[in-house]
Image (cartoon, rainbow, N blue to C red):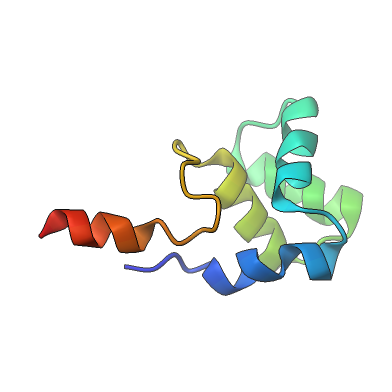
Length: 81
């Protein structure tokens, strides 16, 4: 199943002016570890739309960040068979 945020993830740099890695570093430097806290910080502190805040939070806070392009689900599906 594809990530619900794949389209949003690809647009983060052009829509927010920062790369995903920059957003992840910002969340880490602010000690954010919970999705809700990340969304609130991004939305309220940096005027990031709710949809992009969710996509960024899910990308940065997910347990494994092996797939930098947000498309790792394709590999997982192939491995399942």
